[in-house]
Amino acid sequence: MPDSGPLGPSLPEQQPTPPPLPAPDARTPVVPDLSVTPTALHFLAGLHPPVTVPAPPSAPTAAAVRNACDTAAAVPHAQDMPDAVPAGRDLQVMSAAAAAASAVRNMPDTAEADSAVRNMPDTAELDSALQRVLRGPTGPGTASLSVARRYKPTLPDPAPRAAPAQPAAAQAVPGLYYHPVPEPDPARVEEVSRRIKRWAEDEVQLYPEEWEGQFDGFSVGRYMVACHPDAPTVDHLMLATRLMVAENALDDCYCEDHGGSPVGLGGRLLLAHTALDPFHTTAEYMPAWQESLTSDAPRRAYDSAMGYFVDAATPSQADRYRHDMARLHMGYLAEAAWAQTGHVPEVWEYLAMRQFNNFRPCPTITDTVGGYELPADLHARPDMQRVIALAGNATTIVNDLYSYTKELNSPGRHLNLPVVIAEREQLCERDAYLKAIDVHNELQHAFEAAAAELAEACPLPPVLRFLKGVAAWVDGNHDWHRTNTYRYTLPDFW
Image (cartoon, rainbow, N blue to C red):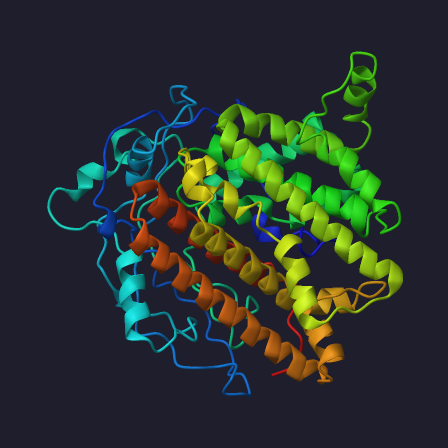
C-alpha cells in the first residue's frame, strides 16, 4: 500500500479506550434483503458537508490555487444499525436499493462551500451533473426511505453538534482540491480502535510489544470510520479495518522499514497472496501450505482478515478483492525492481506504477462494508472501472504529498511523485511539489466528472450508492492524512 514504513507515533487524542458496550468480533452477515427503491436521479445524499477547517496559506502560483467552488451539498451524520442482523449472502440488484436508502437523508440541496474546498472546474454542465449525483431525496415522505431509522442503534447517538475545528497544525496541503468531512463518530472510533487492537494482539500476534505505540499512532479506527460513513454496524467497519491493518503490516515487514527488502520480494508476496487466494493442491502438500499461513505476522493477518471478509461478502465481492490485491502486489514488485536497479522512472511510468501500487483495494470494498452488493456486471463496466481507477490514483497522490517530508527523512531513496517530477523534468523541489499538487487536482476532477457521467448513464440504486461510497472514501482518506500530524508534516514551501 502507499506510504509504507512504520505506523507512526501515538496520537494522544486518538488513543483507544474501552467503551462501555463490549461486543464480540462475530463474523459479519450482510444486511437483509429489503425492497425500497429510491428515485435514481435524486439519490446521493449531500456528500460534501460545510465543515469548518483552518484556511490554508495561499500557494504561490495561480496553477496551484484557483477559485473556490460556489456550492457544496450537505451530508448528515451516519446512523448506526444493530450489530446483529439476519444472515443473507445472496443479494439481488434491487435489494441493494434498500441498503442504499439507509444513506439517504433529508438535507438541503446546497450549502455554502467551505473555504478549504479548492479548484472546482468552471463548467456549468459538470456542476449540474455533479449536483444531481450529490443530492438525495427531499420533501414529504422521504424520511421513510431510511432503513437505519427503523432500528435502535447499538452505539450512543450523540446530540447533533457542529463538527469541531481541527487543530491549527492539521493543515491541508495549500492549493490541494479536496472536500472536508465531519469529525468521525467518536463512539465508533473508540470501539473500532479497541476491537482492532484486540484482534492484532490476541488473534494474529501482529506486532511485538515495542511496536505498540506505532500501532496506536496509525489511528486506524479514526481512518476507517471517516472513510465508511454508511457502514451499518461496527462489525461491518471491522471488515475494512482488519484488511487495512493486514495490508500495511505486509508492506512494512516485506517491503519497508520493519525488515523489508526488494530482494526476494516476489516469492514472499506470492506465498502471502495464497492467504487471500487459496492454494489448491494434492493431499500430500496441503498441510505444509496450511502451516505456512501462520509462519509470519503478515500471513497470519492476511489469513484472518480474509476469513472474516469472505464470511460477510458474496463470492463475487471476495474475488474482486483478490483481484485488486494482485494488482497491488504487482505494483510492489515494479517499485522493488526499480529500487534494485536504481532506476528513476519517467513521470508517466511512475503514475502507471501507482495505478497498481495504490489504495484501490480499500474503496473497492465499500459495498461489502456498507452491507450491500454492487453486482459483478455493473462493477465490470469500463466506465465504473475508470471511476475506481481515478479514485485510487488521486488518493495515492494525496499520500505522496503528505508523506513527502517523512520519506525524505527516512533511510534510502523513496520514490514519490514530487521526487520523480523534480528529477525527470529538471525542476527544483518546490516547483516539483507544486506540479504534483496540480496532477492530483486534475485526477480528482476527472474522478468526479467520471462518477457524474456514470450516474447519468446508469442510475441504478446500487451504482449510485457505490459511487457515493467511493467518493466518501476519497474524502475520508484525505482527512486522515491531513489530521495525522504526528505522522505527517508538510514541506516548508510556502
